[in-house]
Image (tube, rainbow, N blue to C red):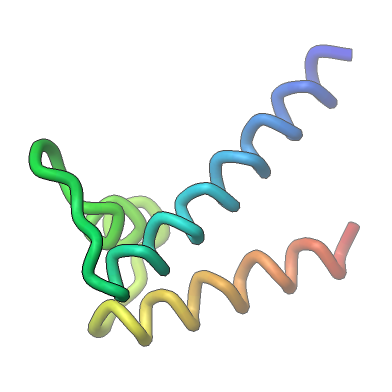
Length: 68
């Protein structure tokens, strides 16, 4: 049960990161702490500008969903 729950929490976090990055691309940014762009680049080792990182991250999440 806890493995399933932690997997769902992880998936939810990834979807929230994707949504927050989309907002950052549109110009909405938080004032303190690292940007979502830098968090995704660091954790998933993606390269490029905000839009290309968004596209790569979205493709990564979609490929994981297809594997399930």
